[in-house]
Image (cartoon, rainbow, N blue to C red; front, top):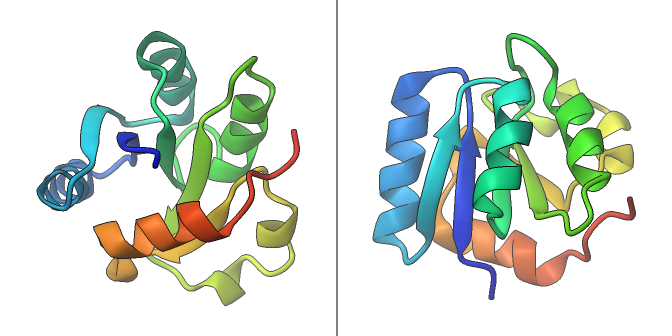
Length: 124
């Protein structure tokens, strides 16, 4: 099972809350990033198994970041998150280079494991 996680979100309170929640539920949070550009750099350095990636970031949106991550030699699994529901993003979610989507309000270790266990990695 994938267990190292990078949390990418521009809101420090969400980064802290998600990190604490996931750590309490058995994941090892190896780092955080506040922007898409920072995430790509940190992924190369830390090589997490999973990237919890906010869709709405200040520099690049999560879809663009996920596409960049998919180009890496050994890309981590990407799970897109947002405070908005899946319907907001429509068919873009199905085309994203991610294993799935989760509303921030639904985040839990169990929900993340279900996404990771039940969804094949999106093709690069």
